[in-house]
Image 1 (tube, one colour):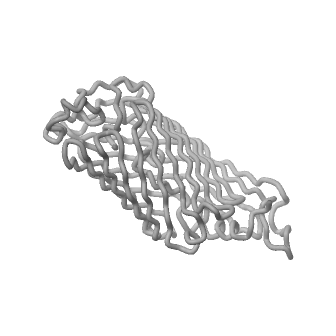
Image 2 (cartoon, helix red, strand yellow):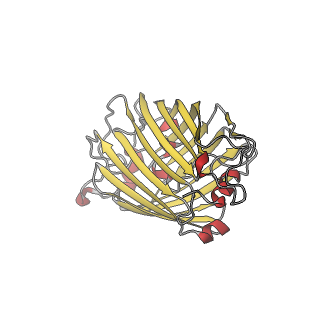
Image 3 (spheres, one colour):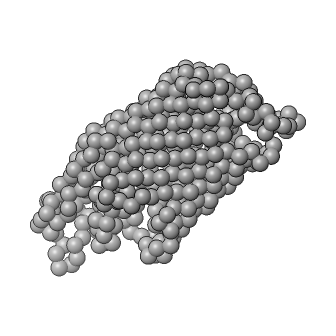
Length: 341
């Protein structure tokens, strides 16, 4: 079936690829995997972290955005931390005075390098974009309680347009100003950098993506698409409410040339290191509810449901986002991340 004209409008108005809007995919659960947008996170934990995610935006609207990603990152050397540091869950009878001991026992990162791999595919109607990047980061301690890392990632990104799915109406089903039926493909290099400052109770991150802008030409009927650099700032603070509950407010701010500033505000309430609930607000009148569970020291999952106060949001069944995580070589049986939570 040909994609309806709504898909073309979505594409040309920049839901995913227009030169006048955000072009990177959105993730409601960015706090669970900041590595997907910041290569400085590679190797930040003492295990190999693998995550798979699927996001179906505006379900029920034909040709609406769908994003799938796979990430893998870990440390090049084994790090040894004291068992009581954040990320471990001692038995209930030894979980006293967690708040009092938490900061005292927290240690800065051991200097080391990390590596990672990212693959994602973002599809909106007949237009799709994929990225395959390898990442490298280095972590050092700045003080007795604070660490910093810098990272770089690079690879390729491809932009595809399936012209057979274009539909300009019954009076002009095959516009001659568009390339002949088939798939128009562009492959270009991709480059990203990032910084991550972190301690026992806070993190601050900055990243730049798409540092090599790419231009695509689909024909006279569709304007050239320029994928521009994206700049992101993020921050979060961990509050230990008691010996069992923690609260994490966080934010992510995105900057793109010729586009309005976009930001998310996120709040996560966690019971021990076992389960959590959260809410999020994006400044395009989008709200999200989230929940997740650490099943064991190898498996965790999370789900988010977004609703948007817009015409597209009203016409859809909401946005669904699923994330599944695997922790390999997790010798200390960590359930919750130590340095980004």
